[in-house]
Length: 534
Image 1 (tube, one colour):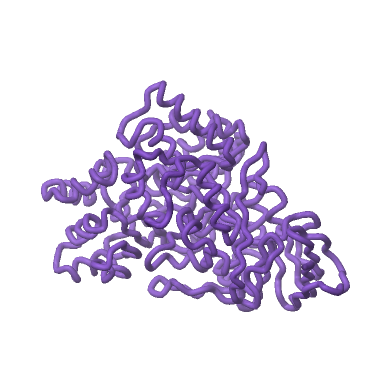
Image 2 (tube, one colour; image 1 turned 60 degrees about the vertical axis):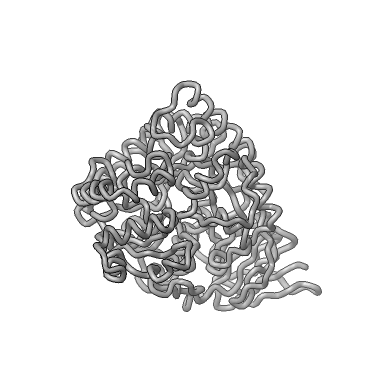
């Protein structure tokens, strides 16, 4: 059935001024934008007083496992997201050689969860993407091939550099997965095994990605003390490989590092002046979220999760862990140092035994257990086999707005979906529209919509998405600019936002009058040539 959106303010994603118009949808495409009379057999949506925008694009998502087990992914769709980019931080689902399934599931659990409800013997990105299609996803999905998975297949999980034969194997795996439709490469240089690598290894993989005009998405080696050196490394990778660069969840962590912000911006502009294509995504909160295991010194992670558990069980090694956390290690992003034990909160665990830890900061955890906070935390990580999520507070609203206004910025959620998640899982995009557009006036409505739609679509070569124009796919989000806002808090995050009235994905209404319709109409987007298409 044709659908006609009447009387809305069309904000088309390009950044130009919004205009009153009707939008006609036929099949999965936009047929016409203008003054359109109603037709017989046409479903009419009255958008008077509402904004009609392209569907939002989440360039940093952790729905990699949930898209198979709960494919509606309502936390994303209900905030207006119609497309998301999986495979983040160098640690994801594929490729996954059969012999590494067990240790890799443990490594992945803190980010994306774990389940016995799927068949883990899919091995490659091609097969993983086919599994997503078979699950009938609730929104459009595309995939970055993760550095850690490539490294694991080529040389295992050891803390060493690859030899030339292994490096060639990494290049071959990267090519295979790009041919399967991956839209680029990701890495997370604070996560194992990615952190074991040096620039040369990444450059060689990025050379392959550049051949496909893919993008390199990076959680850089430092977002704190050594962020300037870290950014120089990323720029070097872009310069020597020719790949397009995209920094994940861009920020500067820790009060003592805020004086580095000017230098950070200078490096962004230096890269652009060199002709290096640089972009970044950002979530609109002063707190981050990741696996609690990142508070452990890097050496604790050598050899994978089983080795982590062995070391956590050793009282003498625990003393060394505390010493390194308290005194620091050069080049290591020390979350306890820049957030503090009282500003790191447990968000998820996998066992019933430790559910009482969820929502507590690490000082409170120690009080609950009657132990030193470090020992209580180490016990929790040991008992949960390192599958613990966390939220950490690191920055200021002033800095959030500073980076939000940068031309390189597009919006993202970067939320872990398990337990008591970061509220960004449910509300990142509405928060930008409600707080930063309507209340704070940090962005205009048109600027914000551009940063949620056309900007990420262009960065990731998504063909015919991210813009309302005739012939484009009918991914459309309709919201009330007077009421749109996130509702979740850090203590009660699982709340859908207000003001997202309709969401259309490939021409079908997935949200109608603020309620999910139960329709799943997403597709897998693959890279073909230089375009990302269904």
